[in-house]
Image 1 (tube, rainbow, N blue to C red):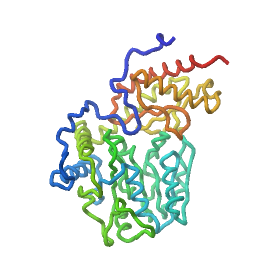
Image 2: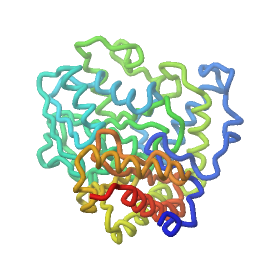
Image 3: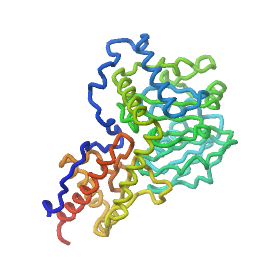
Image 4: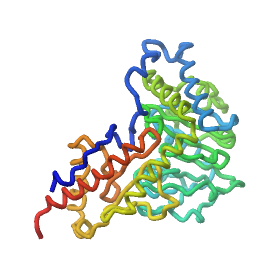
Length: 390
């Protein structure tokens, strides 16, 4: 059975992890040859490269000139924590949570900041909260794309133009894969390690004019660590948004980000990045439509992620197992594919329902997605064959 079902074609690149994600096609360590190593990041060449990341990111993404862009510590997590601790307090807060990371931001606001007026609007994996319940007189915190559930907001139409609160968007697995409505978003955070396929460590924070105004008129009632401070004497520290980072960055990671941005430019920028992700999702959609055992975790096609594609197993054999055995079986599929060198790191997130998670962002070639799909069928058939008779 194993020999009969084993596909002949393998993905050229088996990296389908949802973070850090696959490097751009053709990447090698030679891309880092011009890295500004052994030099201070505050030297003229060092600051120039950091500023170049900011400027090229703005150009590719179409970020308005009135928005500040900064490189900050600790990946997207650090960027989100920085803005939560720096901006929240003057208004009530609505936190949207439908997967692990949104739930994490809700926990931080409720249990760490302990704000007096918080609403957590949540939903189970595979669904979105009712967006009609969001109150834009309050500050609103949400992920654009739920990396661990494969569920994204459908668009920006639900966000009020006349809002008086701030919209704070964790967009780490959406930037460079969606056309984000910048005028609807006051704060946007992301990292290089998602859609760009860059290295970890650094986060990006994008601040609209309303967010800057909040920073310059609001002083939090709690102490702020140095790496969270964006103002001094009531004014924005403008240097942060010109490449003068708060802490020491890895210039190797910076060089890698520049390489990824250069690749994005070379293929046609954001439009081409979006098209590659859409093509990858379309390939998976075609396979799911014919599958007898797999379905999307996202229940509504309008909220289906095109980067972090999460699959659930709907075969009665699998759903008839108890929770522990379902989890073990799903993990076994991922393990078999890893052992074959066909797909690395595609198990569902630890807090998500048992299943698979395939990164389909722009750095992944559609041909590799197409080569992977028959292997999913092979692995599922293999674990059923391994199961003891009832």
